[in-house]
Length: 484
Image (cartoon, rainbow, N blue to C red):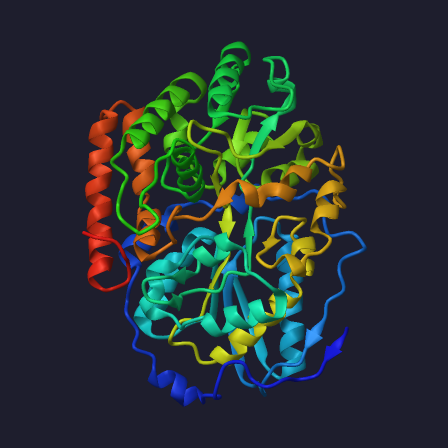
């Protein structure tokens, strides 16, 4: 362990806990639109495995003395990571930090789908955890959380420029507030079975949406193996369908936060997805949970999914033959571009009811300082928003320390930032985008067309009405830009 001298405080004039509590005007926001996520199954139920624990060679962890004296307790709530070895590392790491600084740290891990509802409940009660992490934007809770500007600016001062997609996923330009701190993210590549795609003329997998349709249809026809792109009320469907829209030149909002979903480009994306579903998939994609595409790939029943590397890591331990057959692609190219949403966006929030905000913020800086250890413990699942913190990432991706065959299977992820963007693109992940995300407006829009319940024009008009109502609500509170 390397020790660093203490330095002047970066949070401004130290505040007492009483001062912090005086600012706690809690708003019970988010319950109405966070609830649907509670129904999602845990993707980590698929049990990502590979090696049981990180091999030797994990990065050295360092300790920097906090900028002020800390005491009391710090309660942390975060997801049960898709790669369980990360949680073993995190629990030990956080508690060791607490022992060093005089803070008793307690940690609760729960299913990722339960976290938004849990946040809303704690905000409504005015009590709960001091520090909470989720894997998608939490912008809808902005009025009820502390501004994380001080933490973000200090991290930038220490570690350099923050990745833009992480900044856009934690900062509201309309209010100037960092409603979350985002030190990390996870790419969302395509996962394909080489033994299925090679015979249909794509040995390196599909590279465009049209190739995905062409090859996927032939595989389903000749082998009876379907693709797995969800149109359900779960997080993966939310991500992949946004990537399809962006690649066709469509989006929910423009860069100035005006609703623009009703466009010829959105219609084209809906028409394409309806054909992709008809030729390459089955009705089960309408009722999937967040584990379904993982489980299908691991069981050898899917030719292609869009996901992080977690399903493949699982297969390394449970079905090595499938694992060795799984390879990865960047985002699919469309008529207007090549973009995918991040698979995971780490939003860390400190609710206004937090009893130990100082310890929460100091811990986040310690966590960022040691992000290389987090990346390693997650078996290269977690990527840092500050490139300086994971200097060996490219080398690890080019020569996987966790048993990839071939060893350079993940090398394409060294350029993942070129084809990854934030929820809300081309604008920020504002409060309205957060609610649209958590009420599954986009998966519902696509599903209605794919099932033949509505025409593309009818479905996009219905989605537009829902989205405009959400944007107008938040705009009236001064939390979203653009025009009604």
